Length: 273
Ligand SMILES: Nc1ncnc2c1ncn2[C@@H]1O[C@H](COP(=O)(O)OP(=O)(O)OP(=O)(O)O)[C@@H](O)[C@H]1O
View 1 (tube, rainbow, N blue to C red):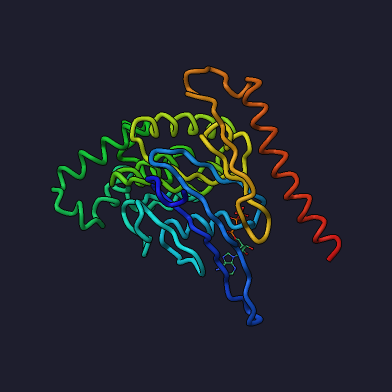
View 2: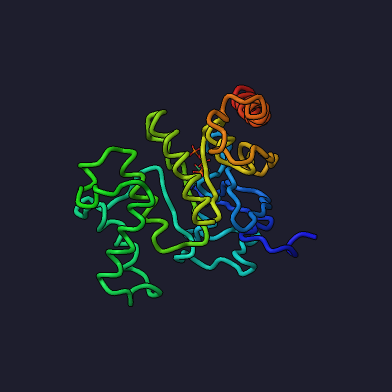
């Protein structure tokens, strides 16, 4: 029965409309129902503009649904909180702070953790800098780091406060292919280590299938959940070249077909209208 098992996150018939300038409304999300289990890695894909970022903003608590509700551990989300770390496509690091101080920043703004002494904060920030493979770069400023390194700092900053949920909005989209694959592997390693529940948004089908235990495919406007595809590939890192396996290709094709139908549907609407 829905709502009875222990979901980490539950979206229940969520609708989000925006007021537009001509006085009307625009429905970005319609009747989205989705559960995310504790410790799950869920990926969301969908055509451009289908409402993926809108969905993540709602789970983060930065915005509120127009209809339906969002539950975290069974309780309604009422606003942003430190139990949900966020990583965006743009690194959003503070340029005047070093890598270490950027990570530390996440501990300073925290009622729960502000009693940590400066020494403890530095130690903890250093631990997370190590976790994302940046030992030795603590004193570098963001402009002295590569794009991949900056995104590692952003991940460390999101994780340092030990959030139960990590929300990632196309975090690797701005990176070159090689760095992206490297960070995908790193992210899986960190996820295994921390047990964090991850909701990850991407345009990349390969990325979705490589990372996700399940991939939720959204429809084009208004955004709904079209299908949730299970990806039982096991431990990606145990297999050197999981991306070349027939199973990977089959899941990739399934997600690709679902998405292609959506993109075709949008084109038809545009050409008819
Ligand atoms: N504040 C807002 N006011 C009005 N419309 C908005 C607002 N925010 C988003 N939208 C609209 O809602 C729809 C969904 O936007 P959203 O950014 O969530 O899509 P997306 O799937 O993340 O897109 P992309 O894949 O291109 O990043 C879009 O049509 C967008 O124009």
